[in-house]
Length: 259
Figure 1 (cartoon, rainbow, N blue to C red):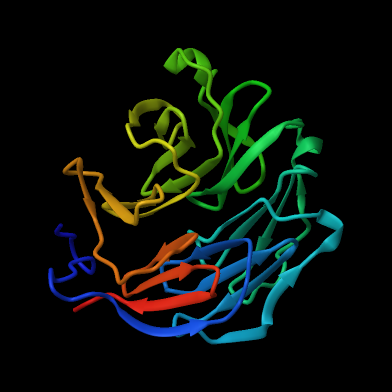
Figure 2: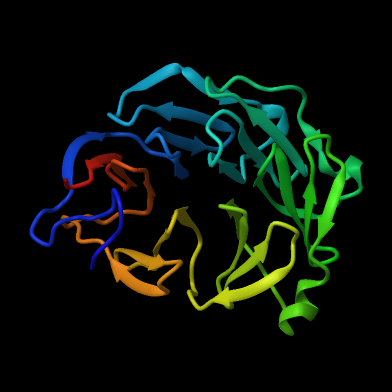
């Protein structure tokens, strides 16, 4: 396959392994600078793109419970979502807490199932009581609602992941595909990519894994492809402009994209 910009591995040139860090974790997220964030229970630890960890760059708040998701799409303002307590916390690029955690239930969203960052310091949440995507501004005031998504797509949605990228909102339902909304919460279309738990968008490429290796979907050309990799059984992945990072049972694997 052919990727664009920084994502153009040569057909005979595999990504270069830089380092393997023997560590275990529940989740992995990678920001656009190549920093890797490992989430285990209530703790987040950051690694540099070269695989170096700094224990000072970690965060944990046991009073909020287990971290459900971490959005690193805005490296200066990370969003932590605690589903069980319906709480959101924001961290800076040093993993220090920014302000007080936001209690979504106290804002009237008692069944917020998903949350992610939005442009201009806003936030998207998915309310499983009303089956709606809801956008809150930087002052936590409601701006937009999608309307009942079940009615929009004429199917019962059960999303497990949401992310905003380039003024589009991507809501993942493993059985239906990736539902795409504009920046006002208006439903646009569904991408026919099913059985996903997670994906990452580095415009114009959507990276995903369905258990058969790292695959891609070009959001403008609407073309599928895959990334040629060394043999590696990974559980999760993350990409940046010059890094491929995988979480396996052996640890974190840091690769450099071919040039």
